Length: 564
Image (cartoon, rainbow, N blue to C red):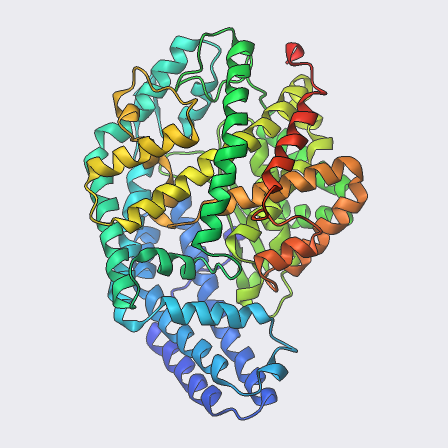
C-alpha cells in the first residue's frame, strides 16, 4: 500500500486499554508457555496497531509541522504515549515473573526480557505526568527549529536550506551565510535555554523519583545499554581523545593546505576542496533512479527492498516550508515496511540519505518478520551500524551520483567519518556533565560545552562569532534535547562501519554476507553480541581506535590530494 493510502485513525484509549487489561489479567494467570504465547500474540496485534497509528501521526506531523490536524494529534500522542507505556510495563513485568522462561525463549528473543528488565527500571506510573511534560517540551524544541524563516540573499530559508550555502566557493559568502544561520540560534537563545533547563530538571526529578542519584543511571536504562556502563564509555572517550583527536587536528591542517588558507575557521569546516565540495549530479528524479539501479545491482535483497520503498512512496525526501529538520527512519508496524524522512538540500548529504537512512530501512525490512515488535529493531548503537556501513557498501556505485566529483566524495566521506568521532564523544561527555550537575545555569552550560570543545576539538576556531565562542554550538544538536545520551551510539557504530569498510575492500562478497546476516538478526541480540556475530571488533576494547587510525592513514596514502 502506498503511504498516502495508509489510513490514520486515532485509537480509542478507553476501549484499547480495556482490551489490554483483560488480556493482562489472563496473561498473569497463564500457567504454561503455550497459553502465554497465544495471549502474548494477541497483545502484540493490538499494540502493533497502536504503534502504527502513532507512527503515521508522527511522520505526517514532521512532514508539515503547520498542519493543524496532525499538530493536534502530535500533542495527543505526547499525552497518551506514557499511558500506553504503563500498560506495556505491566505486560513485561508479568513476562519476567513466569517460571517457564526457558520455554518462552524458544519463541521470544532473550533481548525482549532484557528490554523488559530495563523498562521496569526506567518507568513507573509515578513519573507518568513527567513523561508527558518531557514529550511536550521536546515537541516545543522541534517546532521552534522548524519555525525558522530567515531572510538571506533575497530568499526566505529554513535551517536545512542553509546547508548548501556553507559549501559556497566564496569564503565571504560562506561567512555571511553561517552568521545568518547561527543568528537564529543566538536570537532565540533564551527560548532554547528555557526548554533545555526545564528538560534537565524534569529528567533529574524523574530519576530521583525512581530512586537514582541522577539522570545518568536512568538515561542508560532508557537507552537499553545491556553490555556497557558509564565507566566503559568514559574509557572509550579517553581513547578517542588520545588516538583520534590528534589525527583530526592533522586532517584539519591538511584541509587548510588544500584550501590555501592560513586556518580553517567556523564557516570553513564544511568546505573541503578548492573548486567546491562533491555534489550530486542530475535531477532529484535521476538520483532516485540511480538509487534504484544501485540497490538492484548490489543484491537481490536490496533490489526487492528499494522497489517496495519507491513504488509505495515510503519516503519524503525534499525540503519544504514547515517541514521538520533532519532525517530519520522508522517502521510502520502493521504494514511491515519502513519509512524514510529527510531534507534534501543539494549537498552530498542527499546521497548519504539514500545510503544511511536506507541502511536503517533495509535492516528493518530484512527483520520485518520477527514476531516480537520490540525485537525488529536492535538498540540504538546497533541500529547505526547498519546505516553507516551501508554508506561504505555503496561506494562502488557512487560514480552514478557524483560523476566527476566521485574521488572527492570518497575522500570526503572517509575523512568525515573520522572527524565525527571526537565531536560525537564530546556530545556524550557534555550530557554526562549536565546531568551530574542539573542545577547548572545556562552560562555554566555554555562554558562546559566550550571547555570540552577545546579538549576534543582543539582545531575549532570561532574567532569572529561571539555566540559560538561562548559555547552555543550545541543548540543545533537535537539529540541533546530530544533523546538524552543518544549520541555515543553513532561513534560506536562508526568504528564498526569503518571495519566493514576495510573488510569490503579486502573481500566485498564476504563482507556483504556478514552484513546481511547482521541485518536479519534485527534486535534479537545485544550490541556486543551483534558486533561479534558480524565478525567485528568491539569498539570498547583497548587498541580498537589505534587500528582505525592506521586503516584510514593507509587509505589516505593511496590518494593524491592535489587532484581533489
